[in-house]
Length: 426
Image 1 (cartoon, rainbow, N blue to C red):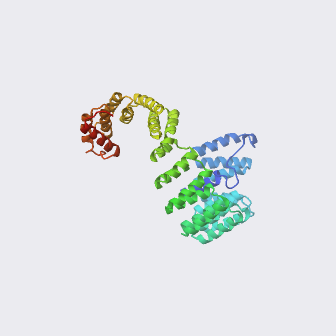
Image 2: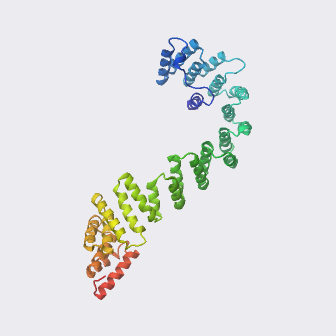
Image 3: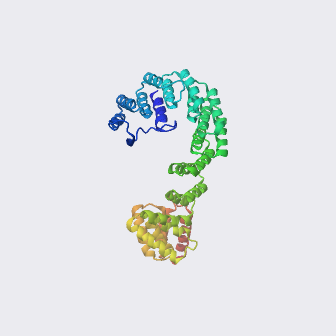
């Protein structure tokens, strides 16, 4: 029950929903000499959660100044202490029959609710809402009816209020009652979707639809609403949800389009380019990330993607660019992947076969049983005309996992032909 109280208190005193500022004073408007000192004492008492002392201090401030803000703050501290009967007594002493101080009326209603005096709270709330016509008071009345399990009445009250100005806070409460209390799930969704089409999908409406569609596990609808929400809330949190859904559905094309348009996650975009083998876009993006972060792995990726993206694999300028990058990479990050790629490039294009084999040996030191690194070594021997050495390696690797890869099989056939004809030339 205390959690219910606390949330309601926060709604009243800190959200500003009821039209009264929670700020206590302006020092330049002192009414009596000790006012500033008493304010500091009262606020300090609140800070250390000494609510009785805070209530007393604010009440003294009220008695000396007649500023209603002090009274409200004093009553707030009484609510924190669950002194509900005291709250009601104090409010009744201040209120007249006109009920013109809506703020005090609301405080009394809160106290009554927390004392489970719901019928009395309802009667006062009905008078209040008739006088104030305040959206939050409509919500307060409906909440009381919900606590009384009179869901249809709560709904009727809210729908009447919603019809006046199509307030989204009212609609949100309507949707909750329909979906949770009355289990009219389709009606809840229809109300929200209709509002979104006519008035736009605000944060409140989109968030409620997201909650419902998530509960219903309707992935397509969930994605659609998240995309609408992102139009008004371009936060990283919303973007991540969209990315997660695209990833879950494996809709990489639309995921890439989203990432390209919003430029909010270049690292993930690079992964996606790699996933769909769009090396032409991956290469410059990897270079961009390297320039931005100085992470050497991005330079390595940039080199590999530059080669893979090239339509002319014999382009000498491209070879030079890729080789220079990879030589720089292996100096800082001596990984087998980069050693093998650099070595194979030097071998396959007959740029420097012996140097290439040197790099391959370094890759094999890290992963001596790698089919692909052994294949590179065999291809290096073949390029040097040493077909016997090359074939010995190939006989071994075609029986290993990965030995059925097309490039490995092509090398095997070529080296086998070389051995048969006893020609060690390219």
